[in-house]
Image (tube, rainbow over all chains, first blue to last red; front, top):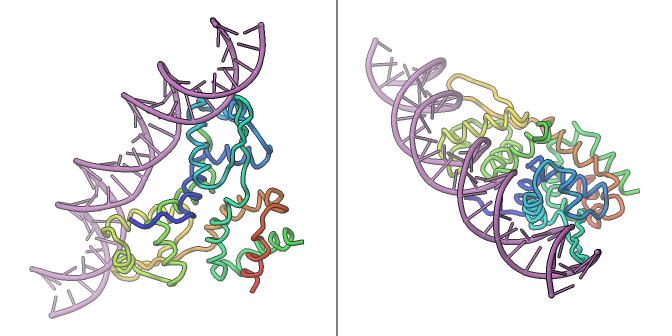
Length: 109
Length: 109
DNA sequence: CTAATCAATTAGTCAATACTAATGTTTCTG
DNA sequence: CAGAAACATTAGTATTGACTAATTGATTAG
């Protein structure tokens, strides 16, 4: 079995549709508590807590407890391993995807 | 259950370490036949054929039969869903990603 | 203090999947 | 033609993983 690289955890975390939807909601909506994430999903609260645990271990989300609520937010740095992995294949898609280059230029501005 | 988007197949395909290693080898080494892919991996030939099937369904590799050999190559276009997904969170990283400038420089060089 | 609320955790179930071993199919070779 | 070689496919197994239901722990409200 191969070693568990950071990109491994990120890919596996984002491969599941339910979990990816949670991440997407957090990326859009700023801080959201577990109850609201549960409402937006089709699964139980327990399942959401489990997914949040995976996302946290992958470095994709962070938590902020407040009273009996726990507010989660997406952490952009968690996507770094994925971008690094893609950038490693830069030469591979360089000429076929002007998209990412434009995107990165735009972000850089 | 959520619909099966293209990014789903790509993420799931690349989430497995063995399968990702196959893709990486193909991305580096141009065309490679199944025997050589099997040698480079820690699993049996049958397992590699199964992984190649998944990668092909995800649009990440293509095959070129030649006699009794089958040469596989990575197909850059298959990464498009992943790049699109990332670009969708443009605004998300824009101001938060510390490493982005460095990453851009690396890719742009 | 007692109820209720929010979230995490546990145990258990079911389906998906990564794998091996064996076989099938095609193609090449002696 | 007979055997070997390359790859795909199948059946079977074991592990992983996504999920629910139920419980627990902590905080707030009445």
